[in-house]
Picture 1 (tube, rainbow, N blue to C red):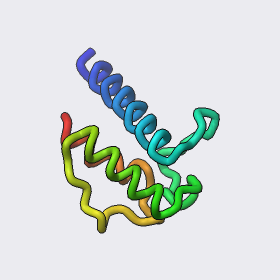
Picture 2 (picture 1 turned 180 degrees about the vertical axis):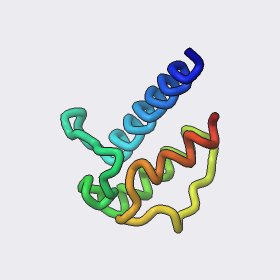
Picture 3 (picture 1 turned 90 degrees about the vertical axis):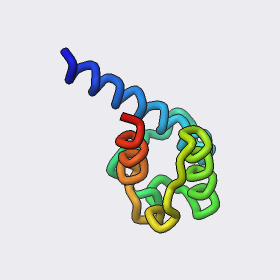
Picture 4 (picture 1 turned 30 degrees about the horizontal axis):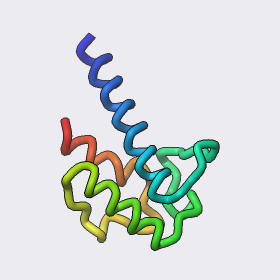
Length: 87
């Protein structure tokens, strides 16, 4: 029961994060996002990446180390520390 609740919370937070990423990157809802996709493969440019990082930092009141964010960063690499931080 507890694990199910935790995984539900995790997945709803992942959805929330993906919503933030989508909005910041001005992606349409039809565009699917694979969590293991590199940020560069989502079609985001470096300016979009900055918008995404800013939006995540603002939404969650955290600081994201800019060194952790590169075109090779995967979406899960980006969201996982945020989710851990909020457990």
